[in-house]
Image 1: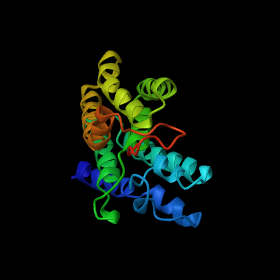
Image 2 (image 1 turned 60 degrees about the horizontal axis):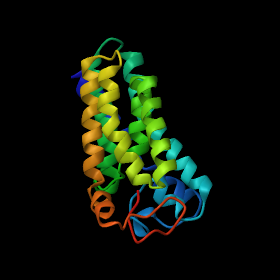
Image 3 (image 1 turned 30 degrees about the horizontal axis):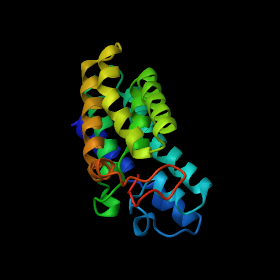
Length: 203
């Protein structure tokens, strides 16, 4: 019962869309109405308001971190509960009840979750994203490469097997949410960071 309560609360927290909230706060159009139609930081950046995009990124990452930290703080040692909360807050972002279950792709939220589960795991994922983004100039490709790396990093680190399973499940879900980007990448149509690209979705 306790696990269910924590998971439901985490899901509701994950359902809070900072892309929508920040867009309203800055007087911007709903991010679901332009660009990739994705309520995420990269799409908010297309509005031209970098501050709104940065706050969206920080907010989405923070909610993932907070949900897991609270579970660890109030139920220390219950790895199964923490893993359930990690998945629940991530699923809340992907399928938010407040947005009719049409949410973002989960990159920032997953980073927050990973940092809370294991700081080294989160930093390894972030480093992979940054390196890939620097080399390929594609946010979506960077996210996909980081997602592929996370299960490997998780297995190499001294982490509870529940955490490894949760982080691996998030990686699979993140890759699935990027299926449109994968098709664009294969077709050579994916947009690049800082450019209009060739009509790709990006994030």
